[in-house]
Image 1: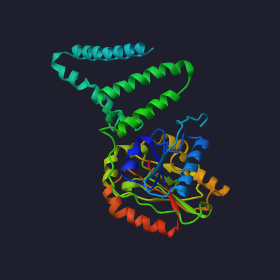
Image 2: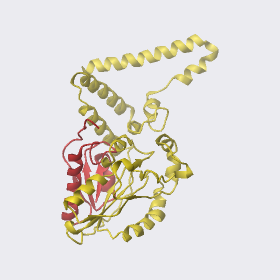
Image 3: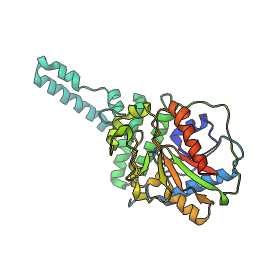
Image 4: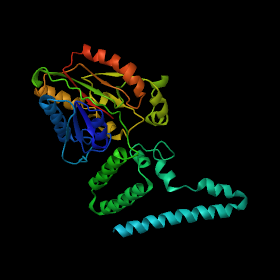
Length: 73
Length: 265
């Protein structure tokens, strides 16, 4: 299972990776903003679901929700 | 507001041209070459953020935009910055960067990838709650005190890694082994291909070892492998496919993993 930012979704699709979670985050922050534990856990939870439930290669889901900047980091 | 930002941009461009002209004129006609040395096209300006005189990995995507798109990005950035002066919110600025990054890398001048016809699939052979998971990233992480020392350089800085990006792209990747118990403040990151500032503040943005430890402790999956791995993804992909990758797979097999989380930089 792999986690890609949206800018490189087409790369994951071209390579037909088995299981991919795509996030609408800036490059270099695939799981979320620094300190945004809630979002980081949400992304990982979705990856675990895909790991369990996918039944064919090139399974890709794109997470809704924008990148949230976290304060106090 | 949008027109105000446009006006400001044109005024700035005009002021730059005037100061360049006056400097050249003041030096005299025998030094007219200096004017041409100092003048810079907009294309050169936007491209300079990608390993050029204004190198900034957060904005190297500007080089992949055409001039019209890059100008539209800068105008809108200034416009939203004007709003941020009053509302203090950076959200719309970040959203704009995200949108133009996506446009730059998925557009005609964007990142290309090898096309594969088949879609390999390996089913998870045991329930997630019994599965052993590993972490492999191409984000350039390593443990403090265990620097991979690329090209034999001790304590290479991020700036040097950025300057030597072509050396990295020609060389075989080095795999850093990271014990899964490593605390966040024991991790270091260096990668000349992407903006590492987020990863420096919190490794979990691309190397989610803390989060995986938490999930393992909560019983979301069976166990976390004893070792995680990271390398600099800006590397010779030919060597990665033919040499280093296959040898790494043998190592990963020894860890008896049921699944691996991959995070590209």
